[in-house]
Length: 84
Image 1 (cartoon, one colour):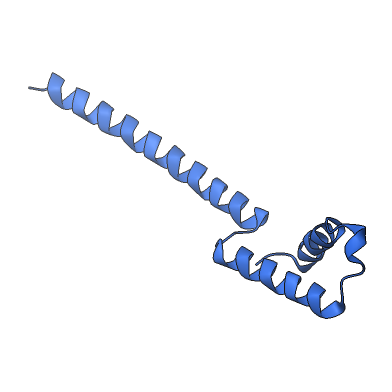
Image 2: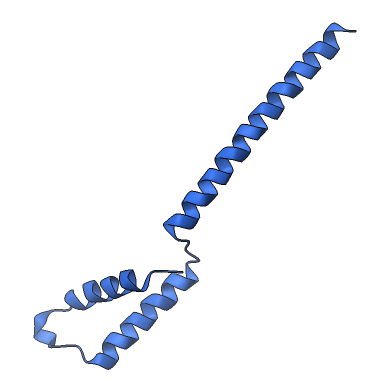
């Protein structure tokens, strides 16, 4: 899930982008902006940096195992061809 502190920062940036002539945004408006941003982020199906890095590590280990298996298979195929 998205870090609430990051969400507050995004809401602040959005509200800061509203021209000063418009005046101070009421709390209800701020809450609606925050809710809409949170909804949009949830619909994007985002993952945290930590989850992403864990998956990168899993993928790297899987790639290493696959490379080792491919090397063993090539060695096996080569020794099988020599025995024929």
